[in-house]
Length: 320
Image 1 (cartoon, helix red, strand yellow):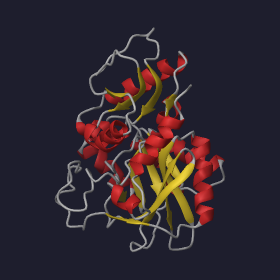
Image 2 (cartoon, one colour; image 1 turned 45 degrees about the vertical axis):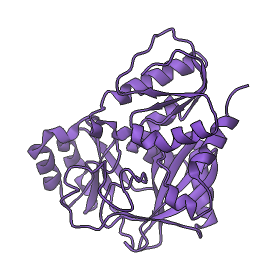
Image 3 (cartoon, one colour; image 1 turned 60 degrees about the vertical axis):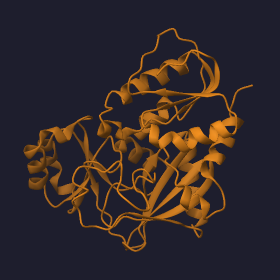
């Protein structure tokens, strides 16, 4: 969808249900904005900025909703906007980082932050020579993540070979995978997700996964009650309990400081950082999320509406 009238803010997105709370908050506050639907879009190569500020809410998981083309268009559009001087929050470089788990792992290592050891590959045969470097079990995950899709725990190279032999389409859309260190942790403690806005912690939450990989915080995907509107193939058949999200008031301040370093190095305007604590006492950071689906019920435990805080930040970033 294109907008012709000048507005203060344009929000790039491909999942209107995720954006409803933000759009409602912007409307309540009287902020002139327009949505830009990346699923069916076009732009001129000499197009001047049509808003004072752009906010990217595209997601790597777009392909799961039949929106594979939204990701490359989002990257191309943001790069073009930035070249002509537009201000884009969570822009092209940030989105490119979110699209690559391998680059995220390298960034974390350059910062001296513990992160799962990973091997990136585009052909299972190439793993044979590295077999001695792999500890089993391992986590098989796509470089372009999103909603936990295509992630599974594997026990051997033979199992990895069989997965891709049985269903070659699993390579799509990015044709790149990681074998990542498996991190045993207490399932009752789960993982921790820290949400940041403008470089500052918004809230922390504990997420009990119950063995699931789709940890999207949006109530659309993981509702407190009822069925998910974003269920991944095969998830409906699992007998595992639903993912649990709870406010985490006692998050260690050194973990917050580490996450803030990641946010700053990644250039995140709004985003989430995930870590877990292993059974042998490691605190391991493993995921950088530029698309941050905030969870109102968790934020309510801290006494605020998270989308109002995002609007506060967006308004503060409008160029004069």
